[in-house]
Length: 87
Image (cartoon, rainbow, N blue to C red; front, side, top):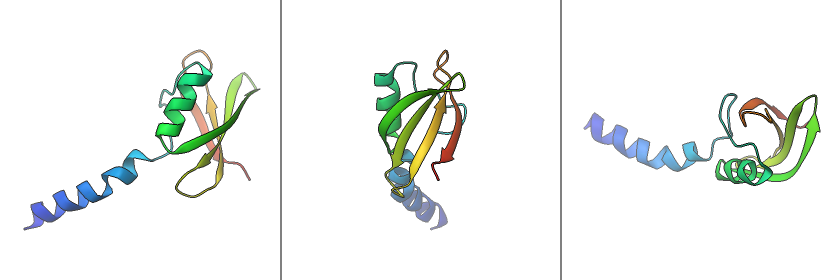
């Protein structure tokens, strides 16, 4: 019975895991189009991009919490280098 419960729980929570914000090290892309697609697939609606300290800062709204987030992206690799709440 326990394995069946674990399977049911995993299937129930899977859609929420797919909506997790990107983490440091995730690759979202080196172009605005690729980064927008990857961030929005992760549940973060992109409002803008701007350069900041050699990185690209993506401002987006977390669909799960409606909080504005700042996602920092390495422009050469497309990897996320930082994630913070835009307070």
